[in-house]
Image (cartoon, rainbow, N blue to C red; front, side):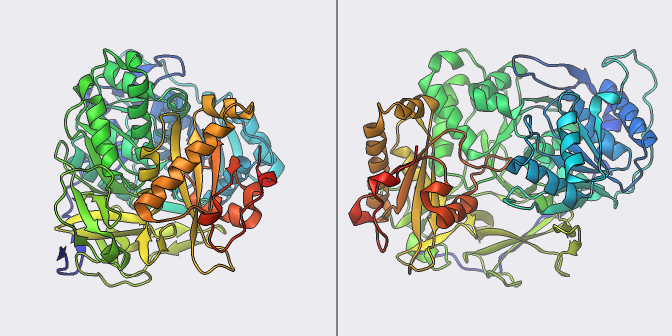
Length: 624
């Protein structure tokens, strides 16, 4: 084995000249050029409206003029409920064209007073200090009632109130932007995707957005391509990584509502085929779900053509090497090119993109010694040829995320420190550069400046090896067992591989009870409705017990790690962020506070030999 240590691990990519000063300028330029591209969103049942850049721009100008007539002035904060629709896409650009600061809100179709979703919406409105809240005609009354009950001064408006010109009105002079924008002016207050309670606002300027879109387009080659995306427009990966970056490059865009993907994951690749998309993006769980469905329902994907797809960005969570190999192998018969999956790393504090590999290049999979990794060092294990889950618990495979995108600097520091560590040392990832925020908005609305050196801590653990960034896991979710450092995803990959196709996810939550000397893990096994509905009738309780025991044994065999507690959960019941990340910290806190009563699912009693330092729950403690 070799120990990969070298010079201090700070990496920077030289900035590329920004073609457009703002996102609004880019859309205007494409409209003037008459770019042969189309923009639109699908409906739940089929194809929605698609319009040209000139038609889109005319509607943007009309909408922006309407906002200004209602009192929106440069620097005013305008919230927008980010429902996936052409109307919302137009409003997104119009808010910025009017000089406003866009405050994107997660789209909640059934907003109930007093619900957690309602409270998070109010928290976002409060942190965002939004003077206006735009929502679709179908939803605006619910948001208006919520705002009124909370006593906020925010004015709720329907996006339909901003009547526009017909979608494809006769050609004529392209209207100029409503006003000249200052690139240094605030343009977007987006919320950190990791927020689990009161959201943290990330304030970004027009210049930040332009720099990141330029860098991402340069790396993944969006230019005049065709993108299909289903990620929520309230999330950085959906709004900036997909929609804004595609528009910045003059690409065609077809957006799919997230709820459509949730109901039918294969709709994603169906639209990729129909649109002959060149680009798409998603988190690891989505690619895993699609691969499983293709294998389960081959007739549904028969005849699809994915040969045009050049880039399928994968990020938002740590990436399993086995997932990349399995997805490409499963979809190869549909024409998917080798190495179409492109691992990337990003976060809201840097707009979205931080590092990514080059398109259509082999994914880097490195195998490291787990003992050394637990000590904070990357030590290369003997050569391995398979990216599949290791049968050797002493080896940890990691996927490389490439180098920093242009204009971004990355360094790895000791946790809580500021100085760069050498290559091969694991620490917290910090970012700075042209895309990085300079201001973070707290719950009370106070703007906190980042450290004077300009670097923003990410909360992620990682290291450099041979110039490439490797992400180890979330700082607050990583845990130690028997002296070794683990990320929950290490265990989840092995656990899911041991499960039947009816299991859609396995979630490992580390917990540290106050009176116990070591951390232990709680399992949540997410199943398709057919399995869980049958279990409600008592027909498959034994099946669920055998399923849980299979997963327990897989973790004991691979990691010598016992399971403290286990729950079988219906799909859709686990708390997730807007990007689909399971909120492990929230689950762990609820479990520690209230035990089985605080978390979703049916409890499966553990083996007595597996529980260390805790009482074996009685059968009466099971939950329906």
